[in-house]
Image (cartoon, rainbow, N blue to C red; front, top):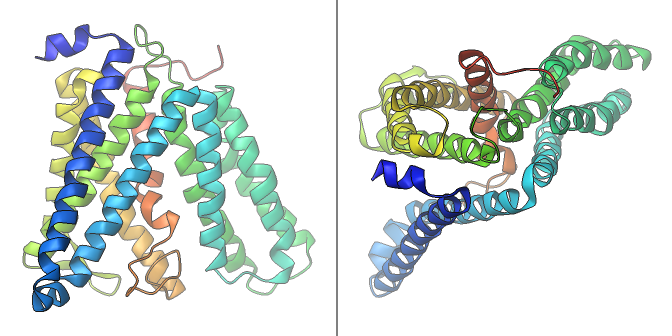
Length: 333
């Protein structure tokens, strides 16, 4: 079976992936629709499970959107995918900054973050200058933002204000920009198949997130950071990480990895995603919100950053692990 899959052309493999992905989503959508029809006849059952099924519907809508976005990224090529993720970074950073209570004196710093650092980071990514790509924001962005802030001549909460903006840039821009960078890695004999690495990343993170959430809801909770999250436990984290690792193992045939390599890369990716979710919960606790979209929990609406936060932590780990292990060129060719 695996040998047959590997013998398929790139276009045939992509077509098969989308048939399986959209076919699975269609089955889930039909099943959810049939269940809603059944519950309409039973008012008590409908009220009892309303919030649970609303969450499922929300996750299913997000899966459809994610699948369609991945399809758009594939057909538009590396350039289109880079622009698409740049837009995601812009919107996510906007959500983050909106809830961080900045001051008027931060406006110039925010202009630099949104309209200088963000586009330059993605421009460097798109041109494959990966040596500069990996240090631009952690080094130059880290220095530029506080300089611009100091020139505003406002020392009130200077450290706190700059730390919030730098955190937003690192998570929403630096972290997420590694997702389209996976498309551009130069593997020998793997030319033109970079989108499979992005698909690998998304599926591993999605599988680990779903498994961790199910484990959290079904197992007895033993929170390790009770004041940050009463639902995060190491048992649920391990279940999510191992599930994500298994998903990566099953997808090894679409990657340049061997089975063992895919398992190890998926483990690191899922582990980073799980702990990244805990970090983002801590940031939301500090901001005093349930969701980055600042919506009511009754509506079930969440922000974009809630959807992509784990990718922001997992993508750099996968990118640098792959580049280091396979000794891939880091400079422009």
